[in-house]
Length: 189
Image (cartoon, rainbow, N blue to C red; front, side):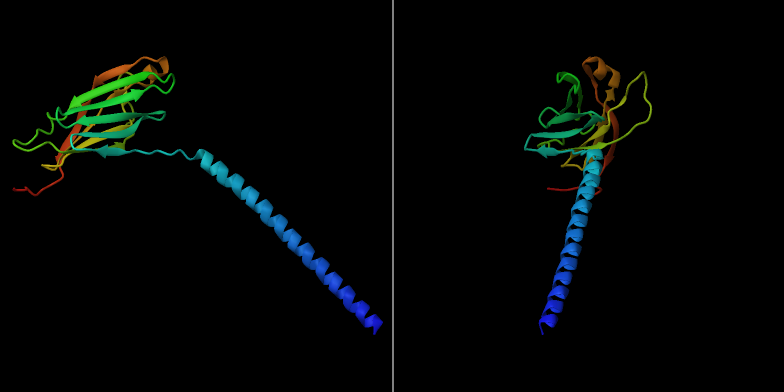
């Protein structure tokens, strides 16, 4: 009888040792896998660059951000009362003023008589290959929508990356890229 109890105790001890060994190996495997997974995820995230654009408008003013080149974005502003569309750029190399570009949207989107101007302002990315004289268009288009008529106009401006590197501020008029109608229905009031 004592021999049976001893044999059962040995089996129990052997089973416990094997179970603990397997559980420990499983824990080590999970920890190593999690570490390598974190390293892989961290490597993938380090290559990820967030490219966010934002816009907001009020009763008589709208703002939006958009990329100018790989290293910098611009702040676009639109004054509904004057029609002035501007883009302000900070030089990422020195943190100083880097560029000022402007246009008047009333030339492309004239306000309707008797109606208060109402605009929407957003930006979108574009990658134009080439350019003239070391200048190429900025990496974003600025879209202005006349909420009263449904007319849309897209603007851009020339950007010289070399001027940014040299710390030279840039300024020029914005250029109308195109104009079209987003609304085919005429509203009557």
